[in-house]
Amino acid sequence: MNHPLLYPRNHAGKDYFKPTQYTDEFTFKGRRAELTFWHHPWQVMADAFLKAGFHIE
Image 1 (cartoon, helix red, strand yellow):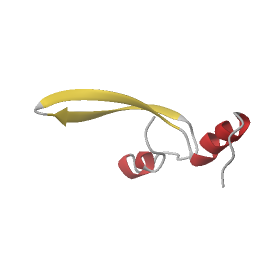
Image 2 (image 1 turned 135 degrees about the horizontal axis):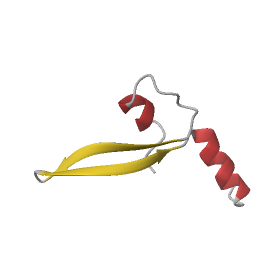
Image 3 (image 1 turned 90 degrees about the vertical axis):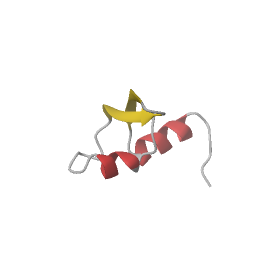
């Protein structure tokens, strides 16, 4: 999973609030690679942490 603010920055026009699986292409030392991520808006992540017993201060 990537930082939740990168998805709307790199995928303009997409629905920020819709959990989405996506693949982006990168080049590392001249070699092409595809990395697959899940985008979840901040509220979904915060709810999961709170449900797991963590506290956010």
